[in-house]
Length: 135
Image (tube, rainbow, N blue to C red; front, top):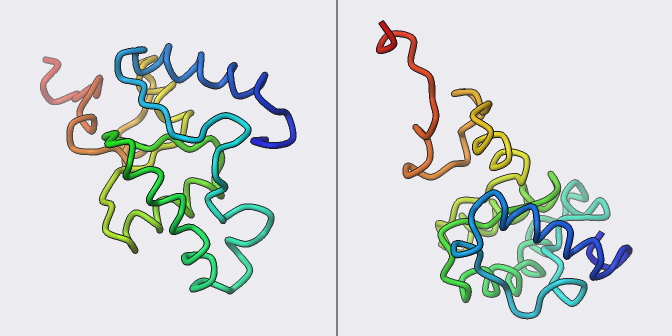
């Protein structure tokens, strides 16, 4: 989507992210929008079997994410999520990577306890219903 639909779709996605996390918590990458760097996981590369090459290609994306100083990296698709999560572990970034839908569900109060695997400790218990404490 980054290159296919251009800046118009990027602006729509930015609106959603800012609405979910709050504009004050939004940290932009440089470059961004349709000029953003590819993570290296799409187009079948994630499943290609060329893991070392994929991680080497993704090193630029990892550096870009680290340069933001953001607490989280939000990924719009599964391939990006899987690749960026692996980049974070491989290059020692230790930044949580979350799907956009995870944050949308979290802010709506409908994210189940079993869907919080990629959230950092600061968000794992946000809006979680605990039946044992509800009495």
